[in-house]
Amino acid sequence: MTRKISHSLINGRTGAGTAGQGLKVEWDSTEDGELHWKDVDESTLEFVPGFQGSNYGFHSGGWNGSALITTVNKFAFSSNTTATDHGDLSVARGDTPVGHSSTTDGYTAGGGEWTNVMNTIDKFSFVSGGTASDHGDLSVARLWPSGSCNLTDGYTAGGFTSTYVSTMDKYSLTSNITASSHGDLVYNTILAAGQSSTDYGFSSGGYVPGTGKVDIINKYAFASNTTASDHGDISTARALYGAGQSSTDYGFSSGGHYTDGSPINTIDYFAFASNTTATDHGDLIQSRDSAAGSSSTTNGYTAGGRSSGYTPVDTIDYFAYSSNTTATDHGNLSSVDSLAAGQQY
Image 1 (cartoon, rainbow, N blue to C red):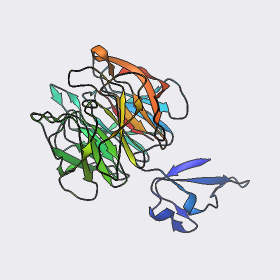
Image 2: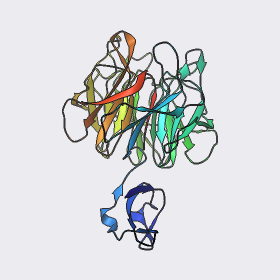
Image 3: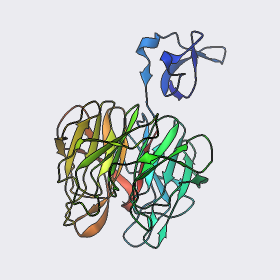
Image 4: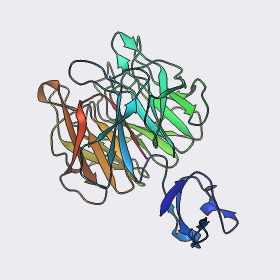
């Protein structure tokens, strides 16, 4: 069988220069009832970064058309089935909180509603259901931020509190403390999609109040607390409430709506390594905004959201990173939901 681990010793050494973090290795079951490491070549080990998962996608919180909810949905990457209820957040929240993922837990940060802007960071186990626990607070409460993560930290960028903010927050996935400032976005940006590479976080699209900008891609280093840099543009059609997904080399922004509020089905992608305008990567099966994005090692998933008339839906679809085609139906959430956070395990 296969197990994802946080730390390992293989042939007496840590895995592939990563301290074993995010590696998948195999166990051999023997007749003595013990489990032993399988003899493998380290060069063949699969690296699973914190911004991708191998097993399940999660969809936490959101708005069902009449109220904010606490539900955490769980759906398998490998099968097209209806998602199951995996527990609840500690507090109901919508208005696009951000989702972060470690190798064992999911995190939901910020969000809330117009009259109750939140700074709470919730933590829930990927393996066992139940109610999430409080994992500290953002430095600034905010609606409509974007998020990214690596294997050790979660990042929450931009958004709105009593005013528009450019602050990027960073918090440890392993310790319950208040987040610290990690620099600023190029502009005060809201309603953007978040993506992650191994070393950088990205905030794509969204809206920059007072400028009319709706296409900027911000790029910021995980390792240093500095102002983000401009990393090119997405198509202007991908303006607001897009869902973010990440392959190893590319960021994807799916769905969203025009500035007039009409939803779209466009999927854009851009290279992490080069500062260029994003390219069309096909379409979702349904035009919608306010969906939550999850990322496996091969596919991007877009769950829930709102169709025309701001009507919440339960659709889950997925698209391959490797091919520019229309997305495929991948089942449904346990109920209609929008404005939620996405995670992966």
